[in-house]
Image: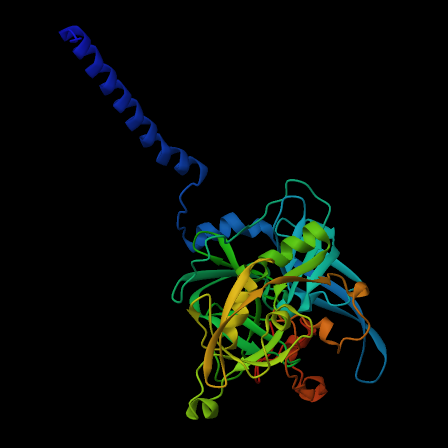
Length: 404
């Protein structure tokens, strides 16, 4: 049966209307996405300071210490911290709040609070404090993870404990800078040429969007050294911070191995570049999968591994239950081994820790075994102290440098 002209025209109009409706619907999708995720806008250093300074705090801890002559005396440590929530959670450095008798928070407007230590992760030099408050100003943590060498950054802190709420401006000098502390703990830090001094410890390092990318925690010092500062990357500790707040303990992914870089001498004998397995935790994920001592991990999930830090980063970024395919070199052969990542939990407060700190279970390394420790006894030499000690008694040493 043939359609009339009017029926053909009506059909064409209906098809046109449907097409137009679909086009409008698809055109609306980007607009909705833009509303849900507003574009990040770069700001000047001055604008970032005005927006952020009210969320930065001075941190003063008081302890009782034993002086050079053996007498117990009160001691105060001054540093920096910053609010990360409107209900009073504060992020700072662990070395500022180690075994405190009291913690006082001072805000930019002069308000003071007594703070409680909620938990810490000493391996990441991170601590979470809490004060009673509502609708407090707080800083946003970087979620994009797109920091690059050469990006501008600013730091806000309390240098020397008395030049309060100072702003310094610089750039990212290096990423993934591996530093071995005097205790033997290895940290992977952001290097910056922002001026960082004692009292800046625990303060925010911000990108030019006003987001926190790191917690300033150290510097090199010396007559021939200028502006070599360090910060703990927020991306490395965000999950631990959330676990402390939500669960009251620290949860990290782990596979249960100790690794080291393949040395130049070994490379000269034809061994591949990668991460060498020094030890395997009994009944840990790697042990269950068949990883053996002296294996060399050359890739994970097809991504090349050039050294220890690569495997630390990739395991740290995994979630419990994930399967990582480790390509290992063993006795001249390359084989793939699937390892299921597990979760390792540890207490967040010092009075909950195990008594024996030398056991494997107390390691905070993301791969789950302690590293070689080379204690530097010079840090306890009273002749090696300088004026900054009165502001930061827990001196983190980078070579001949001191912590901030």
